[in-house]
Image (cartoon, rainbow over all chains, first blue to last red; front, side, top):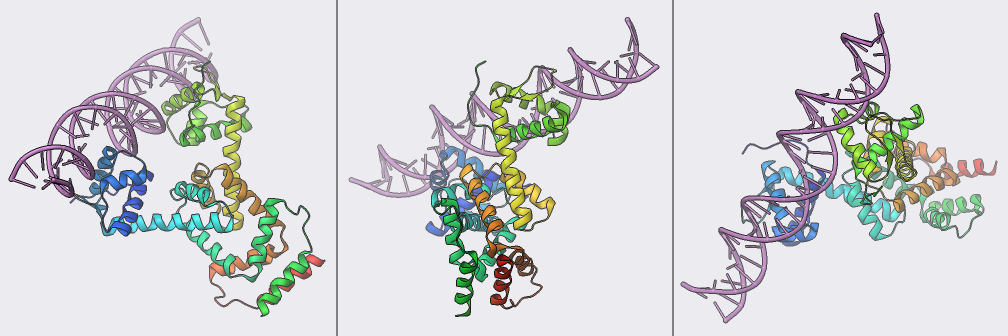
Length: 168
Length: 168
DNA sequence: GTCAAAAGTTAGATATGACAAACTTTATTT
DNA sequence: AAATAAAGTTTGTCATATCTAACTTTTGAC
C-alpha cells in the first residue's frame, strides 16, 4: 500500500481525533457516528475516509468499520493532547467558560505547533508548582478581570500568605 | 454597492491584515506587494481583492491601488491586535523564540475569538502587575523548562525577594 | 429467509483558494 | 512618442471540502 505522506489538513486532523474518540467509547468507529460528531453528512465522511486510508492513517474497506493505524493513532493522540492542553489552559488558568474554552481549543489545536504546546505544558506545570502562583494568585486574577476590587490590596501581605503556606 | 456579509475566511483576514501593514508603511497597498508579503502569486491576489471588494472591506478598482474601507479597517485592526497579543504572550511569557512565536501567532490569530483574546490580554496584564509574578518568577520559569536546576531552591527565600522589592 | 430500514457509497454541484501562463494596462526609459 | 519593463488581470486547471440526492450494501425485524 503506497501511502501519501503529504501534510494532513485541519479537516483530516479533526477526523482522526473523532475516530480516536469513537474507538475509545465504542471500540470501533462507524461513518455514521463520525458524521454526527463532526456535524457533516454521511456522504462527506466517505471522501475523508478514502483520503485517510490513502495516507495510511486508518484501516478502511468500503462498508467496514474504521480503526486507526499505528501511524494514524500517533497523529490522533497528538491532536487530542493539544486539544486537552489548550482547553485546560483556557479553562483553568485563563478562567474562560467551559464552552468557550472548548470551542477555542478546537480551532487552536490546529494552529499551535509542538514547540508552542510543549512550552505551554511547562508553563502550566510551573504555575501549578511554584508557590508564588498558588490559589491566592489565581483568585487575585479573578478579582483583577472582574474589577470587583479596582484598587489592589496590600501585595506584601498577600505574598506573606503564600510564604506561610509554603513553610507549613 | 450591495455588500456580502458572510464570515470573512482566514485567508481573507490575512489579506486585510497585510493591506493594513502596507497602508502603514506605504500609505497605500499594491497587489504586487500584497503578493510578496503573503507569499502568493499576483494572480491569486486579484481574486482575493475582488472578494474583499464585494464584501465592502476594501476600496478597489481594477489597476488601482488598494485601501481599506472603514469596515475593512475594523477587521484588519482586530486581527492585527490578536496577532500582537498572541505573539507577545508566546515570546515574552512562554519565552518561545521570536520566529516560532511569530509563526504560531499567524495561525492562532484566526483560531482565538474575542473572549479568549480579551482574557489573555488581562492575564498578561495581571502577570505584569502582580508582584508575585515579577522577573524573579519569569527567570524561575526559564530554569524550570531548561532543567538547569532540577531541584528547586528555597521558595520562601525567593518569595521574600519579591516582598522586599515590592516594599521598596 | 424476506424485506424494509439503516448505514454506506457514488455522482454531480458548489465554494474556496491557489497556480501557471497568456494577456492587458500602466509606468519607465530613452 | 515609442519601446520595454513592470504591474495587474484573465482564463483554465487543480485540490480540498462540503452538500444533495440517488443508489447499493448490510443489518435487523419478523
